[in-house]
Image (cartoon, rainbow, N blue to C red):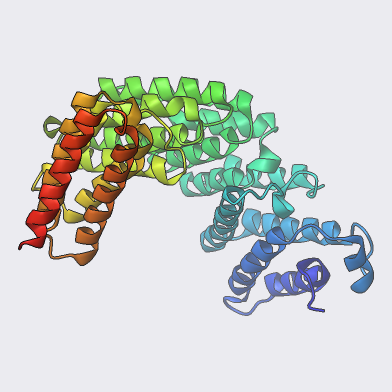
Length: 421
C-alpha cells in the first residue's frame, strides 16, 4: 500500500530541518519549494482512518505532531529568513489556499492541516508572523499580512491579528494596504462579525477622496468575499450597487460588477436584483467594455446553475441589442445567444403573447444573421437555439391557435427559404 502524507510526515520534517540548516547556497529555498506540494497533498488527504494508523505503524496524534513541527519550522524561517525566503514561503501557502478553495467549491468541508483543530501551535505560529509585521519594512509587513490571510482559519479569532489587518487598510503604502485587503477578505469568509466591520470600513475607504485608484480596484475585488451569511451578502450587494451608481470610473464599475455577480451567484434571492443591474449596463451608452463584462457576468450566474429567474422583456430585448451590435466580437454574440437559450425556454409561458411574437421575429432575424457566420459551431448553435424556442412555443401556444398558427407559419417560411438557397 502506498504511503499517505501522514506516514511520510516524520521524514519530511527531518528533511526540512536538515535542509533549512544547510550552508549550501539555495538549499533552504529548495527545501521550502519542495515542502509546498507536500503540504497540498497532505491537505487533500489529511484525515486518517484507524486502519491506516495500524498499517503504517503510526501512533494516534503523531501526524498532527509533525504537521505542527513543519509549520513551526516554516514560521521560524519566515521570521529569520531574507526577503526571497519570505516570498517563497508566502507563495507555497498561497498555492495551498488556492487548492483549498477549489476543494471547497467541489463540496469538500475538511480544511486540511491548516484548520485550528489540527494546529495546536497556532498561537506560536501567529506570534512569529506578527514579529515580522511589527519589526519589518513595508514589503515584509505586506508579506506578513498575506500570510495571515492564507492562515485565516487559525488567525480569524486573534484580536491582535484582526486589529493589525484593519488598521493597515488605511496605510499610505499601496503594497501594505492591498495585502490588508487580501487578508481581510480571507478572514471575512470565515468570521461574520469581522466581515461586518470590514464591510463598513471598506465602504468608507472606497468613497474617500484620499483613496488611490489602485486601492479602489483592490477594494472592489474584496467585495466578492462578502457573501456569507445572506444578511451580509444583502448589505454588501446594496452597498456595492450604490458605489457603482455613484462612480464615474469605468474600471471600478467593471470590477464591482464582477464582485457583485459572485455574491449574487451564491444566493437565489439576490439574482433578480443583480440581473437588473447587469441589464442596465447592456446598452450602447454604457460603452463596449461595460456591456461586455455585464454579459459575461450574466453568463457566469447561469453557469453556476442559478438560472431560474424571470426573463422579463427588458432583459430579453437588451440581449437582442447586444447580438445586433456589429462591433461586438463574434464570441460575445455567441454568449448572448447562450444566455437567451437558458433564460427564455423556461419563462416563455409567462410572457404575453404579443411580446412572444416580437421575440420570435427577433430570433428569426438573429438566426438569419448568424447563418452567415464563417464559424460552423455558431451556425449550428443558432439553429439549435431556434429549435429549442420553437419547440417550447408549440407547447405553450397549443391552446392559442391564432398565435400558434402565426408562429408555425413564420417558422415554415423561414425554413423553406433557407432550403431553397
